[in-house]
Image (cartoon, rainbow, N blue to C red; front, side, top):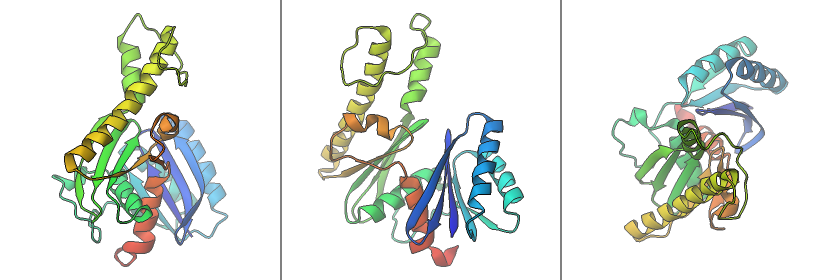
Length: 255
């Protein structure tokens, strides 16, 4: 049994892995350090009941990574902890300037998408603190990507920099027009982003004159699922699955 951790900017996901299956997925918000440490310790103590042999971590958050490593050492002092940083992957043709700046979450999203949907051209949209878009061809060539502010990041910036709007909770509704500030903000949040995602996919398909399968992942993916085309696949655990395929099926001999 292995334990996998996906440390993002705002959330950490932890799961158990055996073979090509993951289970017991737990999520922790990274905002408050004391709460994070407490929640992480509780999860690790609970997972200790299992026969865990190795721990694998993918991280884009150095501060949370350091806290996580210290906590793991206290609970699992004898276990080997592997921080996954290797971007050399069998058959993955990726040419990215300064490859060390290519986020590990993006890398494992590509791996997960490839092994879930083999032989398809893929567009992977990860909606989080930042939104990332990565495009991979059917023969596993990285075609390029985009990075821009995540929906909540943009929303928070709007609220904090516009004195007359005030702070409002998001109201998830299919109404395209609002009749109050809260409704207008919520409609703008949902439709501006979902239409942008759909339009971006169409633009990429037109640019390459190919059909692409789109996968949506990240912490906010479920919010937009009702507002996106039905053929868009929602998979919140894509990064964890990419880590799983990487360590269990492809590069086992290198680890």
